[in-house]
Length: 124
Image 1 (cartoon, rainbow, N blue to C red):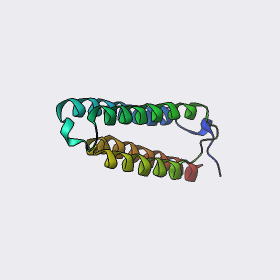
Image 2 (image 1 turned 60 degrees about the horizontal axis):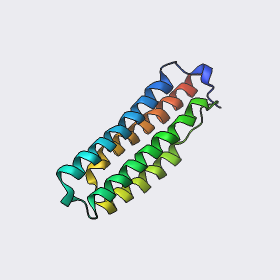
Image 3 (image 1 turned 120 degrees about the vertical axis):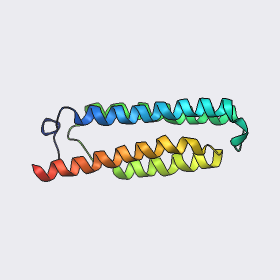
Image 4 (image 1 turned 90 degrees about the horizontal axis):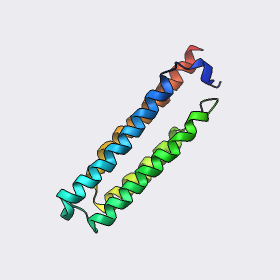
């Protein structure tokens, strides 16, 4: 069974998108602050690491916006888990452990979306 956009509460998609957007912005801000305050904590050049973190999070924001046109609302948890694993691995290689915090919070948002979607389908 699929979940059509008309069956979803109006706040469902915007809440999720704002959550993910804010997590990515938080990761960017943390990367900038961390690179300025604690550059020695990165395993590689702090500036390059900061740019890589910013690029990953900007890409994540860009990939979020096609979701506005998704109808029916499709599951994407497997892709979200793969994205999290790859990004977490990159952060660990860079030594940017602080960026794992908003990344994990973003994953929690993905899990919430999946859980809420499943619950909405069961109630149809």
